[in-house]
Amino acid sequence: MEFSRDQFLEDGYVILRGVIPPQQLEGLRRAHEVLVERQKEIWARERGPDDPPGGVWETHAQPRLNLGALADQIDAQTIGGVEIWLHENMQGVSSRLLGVEDAAVTEMMVMCNPVRDHETAGHRGWHRDFYPPHTAPLQGYADDILENGPRYIQWNLPLYDDSVLWVVPGSHARLNTAEENAALNSDARTPVPGAVQTHLTAGDGVAYILPLLHWGSRYNAKMRRTIHGGFSEYTTQKDLPFLEHLSPASQAAFKRWNERSSQTFEHIEEALRAVIDGDGTAYKAALERLHPGRGEKGWLLSTIFLSKSAKRINQLKSPDFDSLPEQEQVWATSIHPMTLQWGKPLADRFSDQEAGILWTRFKFVDDLLQDEEVQWVPGFQGDETHYYFDQVPADLSVEAFLGTF
Image 1 (spheres, rainbow, N blue to C red):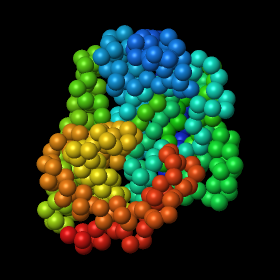
Image 2 (image 1 turned 180 degrees about the horizontal axis):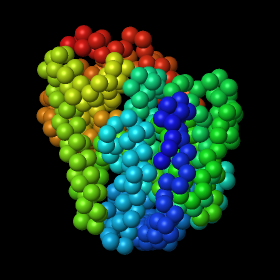
Image 3 (image 1 turned 90 degrees about the horizontal axis):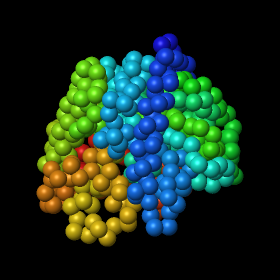
């Protein structure tokens, strides 16, 4: 499959025609429809007392399947829904776009149409797929992308014609313009200046770099089954019962990715323990093992991510954890390898005392990422916060952090 990686890095997205071989399209539709029916049964069982009989299927503006959560429902009849992720047109292309030898499937999902139109409510407006209080300011992402290339790319691969997604070319590597902010503040659910609608026919794909500014436009009842998820160097797809149904090459790929992810987990622990020990040299060595060849901007972004990890570890170790706001508990326990967050499995590696020391040291980073005044920039997930949305403070650097030891 031909494309220009340079153009992809400049625009932040690329449209690829015929990602799904035509002879595979009908089989993939059938496999995914079986998965949809199995997920609908689960949602019906899990519905709340005030929900309609179908639960999420009837109430959500964009019912979404997570194949990792549906792992025990994937069998010989539906395994094609996983195998497509390992096709050269997806996994191979993703490796080339990321600039790595062997990109790993990180998340596998399917976006479906709602049972009724959601024209003005129930769907998200223009946004970037992150929230700085839980990750990093936009400039941290942009600097790392410009210096080192993307860490993660996301896909939309429709099984039926799909023109839902809009993107703003180049927005993955810069802050919002004043014109964009004005448009977003006026109405975040209409096209902004310079936006492009991705018109995809069944089997086409669009791959894009987060944090590209994008919009899901209108969610209506038109048939939609769009494969969605992404690739990085790590996977969250572990202990999957469907592995026996995969081809030998695909089984080997998942095993390879899991081994790499486990090694990454160890490197993250090494970096955090170096901070506990106040050993800057060991910390730098751990960052190099974690991200070989990434430059200063990449190390800074990883340090910001690790500061969030330290905060979550301390929260998980706190006897007051259950009194935290529900969303904070969700974030503390979530596993998000692209931002070096491994939830409870990582927290369990540290004692209560170590967690306290870790957070005390990283609080220097966390404090610099906040302002006394409440911050807000349109086009992000989440609400107002004291954390900076756009800029990384000029006095925050890896060396400044290590100088506090």
